[in-house]
Image (cartoon, rainbow over all chains, first blue to last red; front, side, top):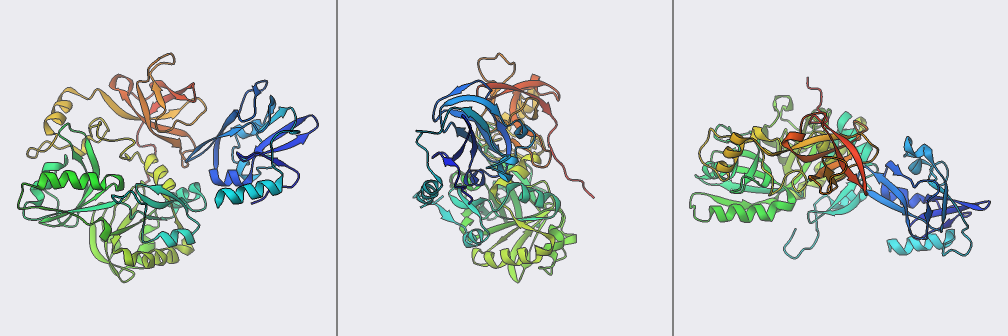
Length: 127
Length: 373
């Protein structure tokens, strides 16, 4: 399972990457593997405001429906519109083209894990 | 499921782990929902072949001089003319004309019928049938579920692959027929039946022989890219083929006529449980019917989502019985019961998807039928 060092991670398997004064959010390699091939993505509307842990949107595989949560508080600045026609990007490139939303705000001070911490978290969850 | 509620393993449990199966609990058994990819497994069955462990299914035998009469009593289909070696789909009926279960009846001998029943219903069916047979001294009801493993090899290449493992001439075995023969040196019932909408076979054999047969089939199928397939693909395959799933599309509140299964309801036979209700329903017409639909708005309708006849309805007319993104057709499809006046193809209605009312349209069932030669 790939867990890039430069990202921060939420305990509900989202990753967070700081870009200037905003953050990009996606789901981890582990999360997409658990979900299976994503066939449908429901993203929030640009401009909506979310608190930590709020449901940002929905990812669906053939078999399952899964929510993804806001790892930080913020307003939605942008959503990955490519996912409407290419939901499989979430599986094929979860840390890249499969990103989900861009939020205003900062990962600073949020209760997030670093790569080693997330790996440990996964080890504990599967133990 | 055992009475204690413990989760059972099939004889192929180790094979599933070895193949990377993602194990889930289903009807009291630990079974793989998928191995590496649900959609790959789905396409394997549609285009080549896939191998399923369906050992969780129940096997109930009706035996004795009164076996035919008893089967006729509990089933809405007519089994009078079945010859040995034939299988027939039917419903076991409640007096209300609703389903105790749906089942495949196999005529093993003049005085013996093998009923293959849903795993989740096995104990319920056995109790129901046993109580009905309690006063009859010419028929026994025997639960042989633990004596049988069941493998399903499904897909257009199923015959070619299985033929390499059996001396029986499979080209002579027609749809819904079976033989008691041998596969890979193992005694087995070889039935040309399935739950995928493709050609294929269901094999019943001793659990202790199942792992060897499993490996033999995958070994022979390797050059054809045959894949082991899990419960996830089993569900999407049967769904596309418009086959009902007990607990979703049919249950103890629905009749076969409402479920679009009028072809298994026969009246040119003697009395049977539920007959009067079904006869009246047939005469007066059903008030609701199971239909297929496709989503027009974005979103995937799933089992249990509310169905609204108009966008502003406060109360749901019903609920989606089955629904998913169809791998073969690439569309979000579903099934639901609708009032008869709303069942015409093309009728628009709405499915509530996370508090949003998404438009859907009635289309023909089945969604998918294979091209037959």
